[in-house]
Image 1 (cartoon, rainbow, N blue to C red):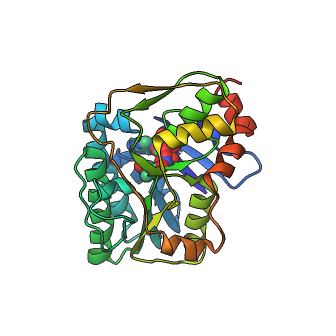
Image 2: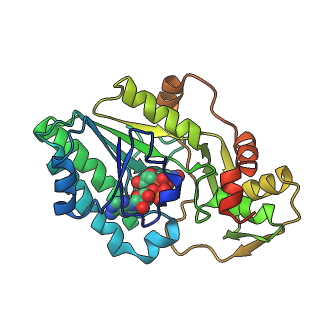
Length: 287
Ligand SMILES: NC(=O)c1ccc[n+]([C@@H]2O[C@H](COP(=O)([O-])OP(=O)(O)OC[C@H]3O[C@@H](n4cnc5c(N)ncnc54)[C@H](O)[C@@H]3O)[C@@H](O)[C@H]2O)c1
């Protein structure tokens, strides 16, 4: 297995040790065609997972041009994959493609895509690229629409890790807006197990799947739950709402995911407790 990453938000320390594994790491930027071409030509890949992206609500709002540049990565990768050894490509899209929802739960094929902000529009463009290369060159794909995922290796740029870090340190938990915006929270193991099963059993070829837990919580309820589970003394403080891109509601129709996973999804209470006891997470937040 070869992992290519430019380490913009990723970190080498979160990847497996290169020794004694069949794992190789290459520091490169997927948006640079020449570099990707060398990598693709020197390996005979069976499958490619395109998960690289500029991520994080604040970062994607502050650096919209960098977000748009990710379109070059789609083109580079698909051009290099077509007519190669690659039998299937996988793309990490996002629940953001649904934009402000017109219905809940959001269904892969019935719910309109109201993408508006650059990150969401680029994910939508990415989906179009993968579908068009399949249509034109016969390159099979699966598109994962990930909903809010959390887990021990996550950066504290993201809400669960940020709230949990504050709670464990008894520091204030800050919320943008009044905290009534709702989200669903998916534990990383549910996300990874679903993706791996799809890959190993060659499921959902030329199809799209929502990958997310469908239990809804408001951001305020999340903060209160984390405070209660960690017996924290943190107080909740409120900041003005983000200018754009903070959708009021989101919930996946996750029937496809549940069928593939074939086990119960991990409840948010259990996920938070697992994270709060994870040595890597505690080290990462300086505890
Ligand atoms: N975590 C979620 O809740 C969530 C939700 C929806 C979609 N996604 C998508 O899932 C994918 C993985 O996200 P994540 O949450 O694991 O974030 P992450 O930051 O851990 O992963 C993204 C990785 O891409 C790398 N990267 C960024 N631009 C690159 C480039 N041009 N070339 C090479 N590497 C590059 C980063 O260094 C990082 O390691 C992303 O495409 C993201 O948009 C994640």
